[in-house]
Image 1 (cartoon, one colour):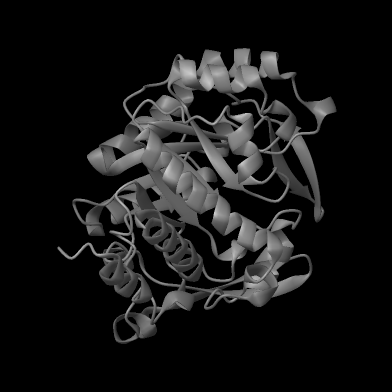
Image 2 (spheres, rainbow, N blue to C red; image 1 turned 180 degrees about the vertical axis):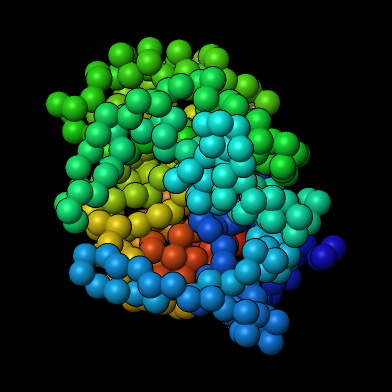
Length: 351
């Protein structure tokens, strides 16, 4: 791949190869093993007979999820430069007694099959960064205070150290996602920064941390100043109840803050659309869905991601664009839309 002309890069994007779209942009997806991507990312003759199914219920609907084996990650990295794994959000890699959890063995498989130049973003377990945890009692959800919230020692021993041991240099970053909180149920921005600082000054700094707080009222000047001071990354997330990315850019002071020169943008769900509704609209994740992709907010999302790419170029940062099926219907098609837009803009600027 030594032809870097815009025409050659467009041709590669048409074949779902996003690895050399722009030197300051690395494309990836949120999770990877979707059977809906057969024929796009994964060769059908290789994996069609290896698909496994499971049932999932959301808001009274039942969906059949079709997934590929972990070994398919080899083919994934023939198309993308980075992969976000989110199964680690739900359970640490080691149990409280130090024994490996099921997630440890799954990540171990990824480490075995992924190429040496792979790059992974892992989601930190919610048990260390969520103020409350959702429980289901008699079919009804309730939210309990999280006894392990900001437990730096447990995070380090049960997740960070085993993750780094398994992936080594292929661990490009760790994503800390915190749930949406009402103003009445959360601290004020200054107190929030003080609480978070106690955690992040205790955990290892050998892997870049990126934070995604889903409560708009906490995205205040003290928070962004603290991120910059600590060298922590801000995740520009296109998610249900957050403001558009362009607004987040303004709130951030139009700056990137990660010490390692990277930034993450996660394109997750349409704005003002709950998870279950976005999932139902996108299912079975095998193509772009006009209900999601041909809307004003979808166009804004693509434009905002493109603008971030050129801000990354201007400030010499590496932007990780993480596409999700639920935002578009099909994550590879969303990556295509952004890649084409980046190339169009590059051509326009070149004159």
